[in-house]
Length: 351
Length: 142
Image (cartoon, rainbow over all chains, first blue to last red; front, side, top):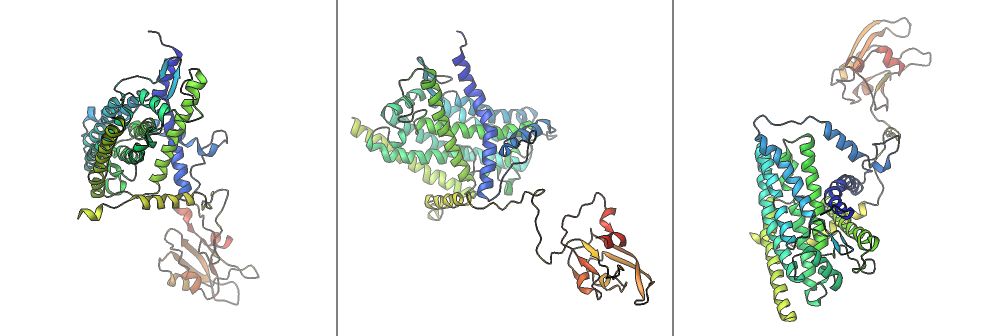
């Protein structure tokens, strides 16, 4: 099997896109938070007097983090301590591999790894991420880090349930578990958020969007669900003892997980690369089948990410009991009811 | 018990997001410091100075009122005989430790000759502790 340019493009999507989007996201987050708080945000870092609205700040941060001293607590479990940041950064990127980022070129679907069980693979690799946080908290031999790790494992397991139930509902709506087929089905019939072309699924689709989005925020430990790293109670949670590039990997892992979760929401609910009148599902050329669909997909992902940031700088943090109550007593029952409604309506109307 | 915690969050969240959206487009409050400077209001209490009269002589008569009034005890004066006939004493040394000073303005209020004053200068820079102790020449030259 020879490696073609298209294969390289797919690899580039999985490897480079999440990592290269992270600095831009950090910059966006800082700017957006500044605007919400009536500040101007980062704008000073300059190359040859060229400031570019502070776009060089992430670059300066990266250089600073690379050259910082890599400290390790004296009594830390060395292997687990080193493994933890890797377990946070790598699984979300593995998850990206099964998501179609564009339509097709010739008859090759634009997905890095076409798995017939794609959504299952994504769920399983995303749940590896919780080990990273728990290991990081445990191996640091710091009680705050340990508490953060424990909180993160409890939180992510609780919300994974809601995420999984919602995904099952959407899989039932689509009738397939292959992400490529899910997006193609949405391109043919209509987006899943609007019921996948069936009017009787319309309320379920909108409920599923809210469920998936909320569970996604909690899965990524984003505000208002960032209890594992709440600085007022736990210093910085599971990454208290990390410095230099190891800390940076935790930080990047959080953003990559955000990108993966937004891509998942886009794929499952918002039609992936499809947008009516812009993309042509039958196109096979490079521009029509790859470039335009990719732009549509990326725009959708960026919109979801921007809304996540906006939510972050609007809402205060949940209390832990509120978090657990919301997860177990509100979201999981709604997800179960949604699942049942989709099942019943599907049997009644489709036969 | 449970009913207390289960509330319908969504309207409040949307209200909050509408508020932050509005905040994104109002005036920025940041002063870009080296280019834009903050202009202190009238009566701002910053760096001290000793005033001179119309003939260019220092107004201070070494009465120790400011040193007595100072709650932080940052002023230390040594008095000497005056060369001019209209007063008995002038300060020989007048040391003011800005690191001890709390910028309360009590010295300015206590002074009977209107000799010491707090200027609106707020960016007081020094590279050592010694530079922060102003002597009489530095105070007079402000």
